[in-house]
Every structure is written in C-alpha cells, then in structure tokens.
Image (cartoon, rainbow, N blue to C red; front, side, top):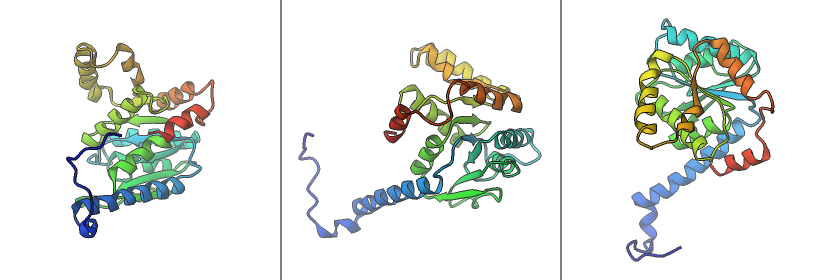
Length: 241
C-alpha cells in the first residue's frame, strides 16, 4: 500500500491518551462487542429481524399487527430479533415472547432512552451501532420492516445495499404497512430507477405484504426448495461483511 508523508509518524508515547489513542481503544471495544454478541446468539437459527418505530403506543394498529406477526413467526419456529426498545420493537418481542421460539432484543445504550423492553428471552446491550447492525443481518433469515423513522430506514437500506452488492445472502425483505411505504416505493421507481441510480431488478429485493399470515407464508415459500441454514458460499459472504 502506498505511503504518504501527510500523516505524521506516531512517536509520542503519550499519544494513546490523545483523541487518536482513544479511538484505537474504541476499535478494540467494537471487536469485543462483536465477539460477545456472536457468542450470546450462537445457535440462533432460523431467525427473523423485525424493525419499526420506537414511538408507537400499544393501542396503535401497527403495534397490534407487529405483535401478531411476531407471535406467528415464533410459533412457526423462528426466533424474532428486534432492537429491544419500546414501540414496535416491544411489540415484536412481546409477540415472540408469548410464542414457542426466543424473543431476542439487541438493545442500544442511548442517553435519552430507557433500557430494553421486558419481553426478551435473550437480550444483549450494545454501545456501538455498527456492531449491533451487523448482528441484525448476520442472524436473519428474513427482514420484516414496519413503519418507522430514521433508524428503521437505516436498517432497511443497509440490508438492501448488502444484498444488492452481493456482500450478504439474498433473504426476504418484507415491508408491512402499504399506505406508509407507497410514497417511498414510488420515489424508488421514479428517481432511483428512473434516473439510473439502481436497476429495475433491484426493486425485486423488497415486497409489500399486509396480512400477518401472508408474511409467514412468504418466508416459508422463499425457502421451500432449500434449508434455512446458509450454504457454505453464503457463510463465506457473511464472514466478509
């Protein structure tokens, strides 16, 4: 790799106590989180990652639908992974917690939010979004994405990007809440496809399904000619995320 004189050599032994030194220690912290989370979730297969707003109350129709989908997935044999917080994350954990398979919360420590919800068979607290996001992808056989804000959109586009670029295996990516998503999908078609930012076939990576039973059926249909376990080639992809 080419060297440059624009970055001075690290020769000051006190440098580990500077901002750059602290960043180096943070890298080690991220590595430790990867290792600990991987061990905590070892054996979790198959699983579905569910996403949605933290601001939805339990009496909202979105909450009721998320809880129902999670319960059906859990009873069908899928562990359900959520962000571990309130709102639709709680609904997903709550539905799975009442079912036959584990409810998993990948909680993020934030200064302005309380800790994880109470409906978790397995919980893990992350300091780093980066490590947490990888765990959502690594263990998921499908994504179910309900209405949400920036965090939900971040997870959705992260998965779409990884699958589109071949860095991750193809999995079902299902949007729930047609009226919520229709504007975004129209923009995808008009702007992203229309102006050549993505290909026509890239829109096939995501589909909208409204009914909870149909969500579960679609996931099973996707895997009907293969098992839920990643193939050897897909495992190699996941190692190179």
